[in-house]
Amino acid sequence: MQVAREKSSFDVEAHCAETATHPNFPIEVFRHPTSWPRLDKWLPTARQNALALFPDKVLHEPCSWHSLLGKRLLILSDGDLATQFLKRPSKKAGLSNLHKRILSPAMGDGIIVNDGPEWKTLRRAGLKAASHLKDRTNGRENSILQKHIDEWSIAEEFNLLDRIVPLSIHLLAHRLFGFDGDLPASMILHAIDQHRKIAEDYGFLDAVDAPQWITSDRTTRAKMALAPIRDFIETEISEAQLKNQQLFSQEITVDFIINMMSGYESVAITSTWLLAHIGNEPSLKRWLMAPNISEDEFKDRLTKAIKETLRLYPPLPFIFRKAKENIKLGGFVIGKGTTVCVSPYLIHHNTLNWSEASSFDPSRFERSDNNYSCFLPYGVGARKCIGQNIGNELIFQLVKSVLRNGDLKLSKSDLPKPRAGISLRPSEPIYTKYLANAGE
Ligand code: HEM
Image (cartoon, rainbow, N blue to C red; front, side, top):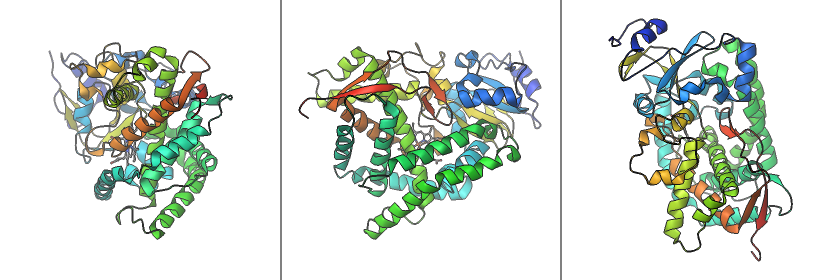
């Protein structure tokens, strides 16, 4: 039996041949269909649903190699390996071009697209700000939620995500800069939607470091699409500062706030998937809303249901990194320059990590045999999400308010499949009616 040894110059084929027989690490070379990586075949699939790019076997194996556009892409779908990898210092496992090139038109010069010392400063300031945000609710969040939910039409069918997104944006804007008014939601949503379309058109090319000339045009278009939202946030922050609400420290700029605001998407998608499951599964609703349970028990049940939603539908399905030097992992070496995809989606759906991986079962979070390194919706390590607590709290409040104020009736009994772009959204609208509680 051969065991992989560190090499100075990395040869993927030779490496895979060596490690294929390692007992603890059965890497197999994944050979893509012959039509790949031709762009005309590959790109439409990536645009439609990036999950379709991966063969089923990545859901049953710890890792596999992909080859795209002649570049090597290592997909880690084992939680322990992924955790070990993400815990490496950022100078070894740094940001990939995906972050820099897709996200920078939207994220400017904020924490999400930065690396190195600048990122460290922003991260420190961001963690400090996040720890204060808990005290900023002033009891207003419930009334913001109530006001919006009261406006939901009873008779009309609506797309659930479309209704949840403005709620999520309002809640987060309130937390972040004390914003209390009415957001020009349609303008903001249009801008975000435009940006998503533009970014997703080329996103997966960036992930594998496609040449800049293929993708440069969309940077200009995306910047234009995002201009209104940047202007809006800039005005709001200066107004908040004028009102003497010195919200953030010096390092925190408009770009930083925009980076934090982008957390609205994950909050909205998670709340939508969970409400859709509740609307679709009467037994889940009976369990959550049982009349005789205490408030603590309700909190416990809803928290488990949120975790299960984040497991099945991690809002950020892929985290990309680039190995900046050779990195030893388990029994093998990831060669310098390799793009590594740690996929919360694949890890959460991998049958090696979770039993009955594709079924929605909040009670799995009661079991002691769970391996929590296989649950990473917020990422792991140095760049782990700094909005984890806020995200959990906002999803909790949002879902609780919708459930307690009325009844969701989904128009179709089947939920759509998830579609992966930059985030994991429903592949089709989830049409819903909302019957408000009588007399409230
Ligand atoms: C369901 C809710 C959310 C989920 C699942 C989520 C997930 C994630 C993930 C997977 C990352 C990337 C980790 C990595 O690259 O290794 C991330 C980064 C980040 N998230 Fe969240 N997020 C959520 C909500 C939020 C909220 C509400 C905020 C702001 C208040 C926020 C702010 C950030 C920031 C600033 C980063 C960048 C951190 C860095 O690069 O150092 N997130 N998030």
